[in-house]
Length: 110
Picture 1 (cartoon, helix red, strand yellow):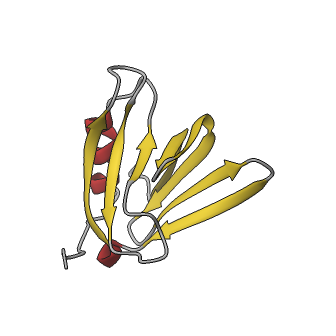
Picture 2 (tube, helix red, strand yellow; picture 1 turned 45 degrees about the vertical axis):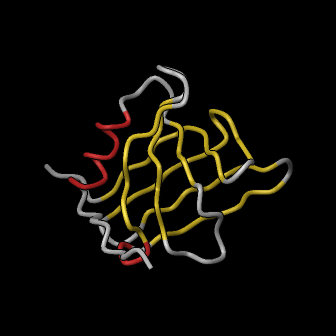
């Protein structure tokens, strides 16, 4: 049985702001990738459609604890530097899971 969506708990870095594990949740299906982040006392939702994402690639700042995926996107309202931390999980496997669910980046560099 194939899944049509999945969730992962992690952290996020958006520009200079960082929310550590477990303050972010990534939800993905073939049409949408969403990241919910707890910032202080509010929750912010970041949503991407495939045509807004240029690439999803592994990103490492500190081995094992600073692993994540960098989402290169074209959403003007979001900071251009966007990383979802997957803490102790392989970022390559997470990127593969996103592709396997059917979310295929279709955005173009401008």
